[in-house]
Length: 104
Image (cartoon, rainbow, N blue to C red; front, side, top):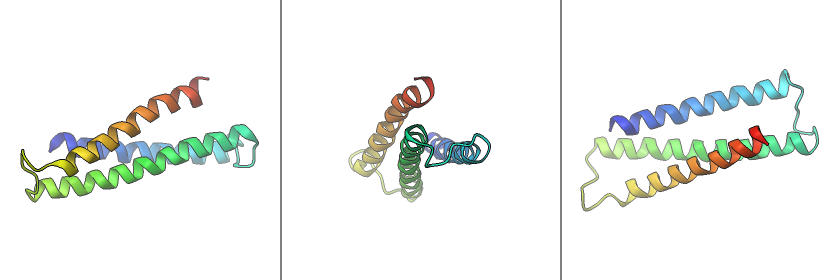
């Protein structure tokens, strides 16, 4: 359960950092939503990813609560697996987004 807790902490940290980045881009860097294709693309891609990380973090919190309550057994843990699949999908999407948004 320690790994699950650390994953939730890292997901929340990612959201705080992304929010800070959005605020900085909007206020300090002069990149509003109507800044053309670049601004729109940046905010849409990273914003949707942030939304999915938010959903995943909430799902992980629920799974942590259910784990603490003893709802999962070696034979009955599909909800846990489903959430981990979702979380890893969001991770993989971030790898592609990071390259596309920040490197290219």
